[in-house]
Image (cartoon, rainbow, N blue to C red; front, top):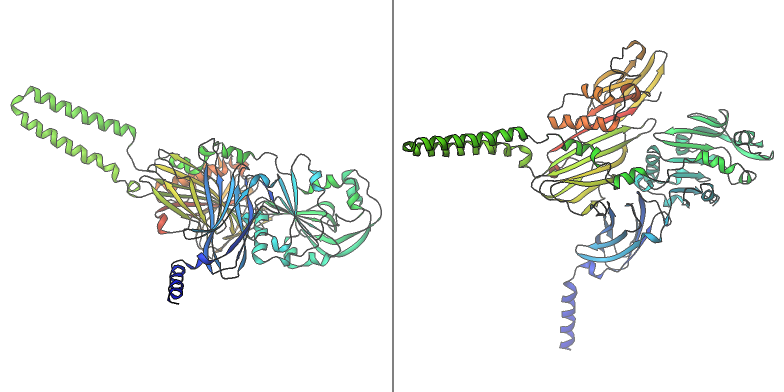
Length: 640
């Protein structure tokens, strides 16, 4: 009796010594890509489903992948993690966007609570389906499979997803080239899914919307905001002579259903403005296309010109991603704005000529004192006093450069951002060029302002080495952590993000030029706003937060003295007065990076607006990154 009570007490004490998560029973399943389809060099979807049948758990779900190149010696891992709360009986599904560069690397998924690992899974990339073009079908049928044979020189995969499985973040669309919508409503998407779709579209995606019998779906609010046409109904037509003439392929003159619509934005590719068969509009740097017939119904499905039509509709990506290849080989490192910036005297240290003169003066004075000492032995004690005084004075002078402020800090942080306002959208594309330079060495973190930031490229420079394991925390925002640097090491990052636009810019053409209206909806003032048109510059000045500025531009009445000068040099001369040489140097390298060697007349073939936010836009203000040297170049193409 007493023995049973003692054993039960010991068992209770043993169980009480373990945390609650030790009793958790976790089942985890990770799936790679969109239904197993990957696109190398892009951020791909990884979906993780977790089921807890035991005690409640507060843990962290992490995915580790590999970046960089082993040939360059900068191969490193990055772990993307997100906190997860699993009550007893909870079943949750989380979607990650993960960079994948090579099939030789493994992707590790783990769930841990503190130091205890609750579940792990390793994904073998060699088992995935690899493609150069990924087409997502948001349709009720599977009638797009033939596209895999249309693009024979490009590995093409077609993935069919229900609305509930569409990615909730724009970065998860990075591996997708085209989305085709037919017979389904965009109203079925959540607000996050719809925002992600529009942000990806504004960043260069392609959306094709095809008509079918359910034409009322094309009249819903979200669809109307994107389509280049206004759909009013459906009609029966006898054949499609416009298709037969455009692709030299006869089309049967049998009745076929066609959407009744009229052009409201963009241009007509086939048909007329009052009866568009194929129309498109620009949406930022992306495209929205409208096909007025159902591509899956006869006789369209058997039409011999169908493959040629789809080649027109879909822009085929290059078979080789030269940008990724050059980045992996390190061919783009020297052109990175932060590397160019650090090639300038950002630290107030003496020049080599000054150091050489200092050493020469020191040695010459010592030699003179010892020579005088040898000539006047009776006054040796006086000359030894002079030697001591000279050593003390010049030593104090030599310590001066090491009092430079940058050498007294753990690290110097740089944020050079190019913010491109995308016309006819509510989105802005941000390219962040970041750098962390440490004189003393240490471990650092970079909290990002945009929550859906993705890391495109990173490398190291300098005398010291950098750590090989980066961490990225995804909630509540994106934070790059565990940036370990040895003394005199530099780590450089290139990031990309899509954010709601802080500026509303509209342009309207009139007989003599342009009417430009700029509305600053952000919290920072736009400095040095300039409109460039036909090689001529028109100064708008400062636009404060909440201010709306409207101006008339008349290029014909303005003299162009600098049209043949390099665009970045002209804009650099007109930049707002910056505080400190570091910010001025950062402005210069950003202008060089964006405009390159284009002359002002070439750069302004399409009118554009340029200006500055005198502060960082990618890295969030934080005591961990103080002081931060940052500036933002704002550019927007004006499309009247």
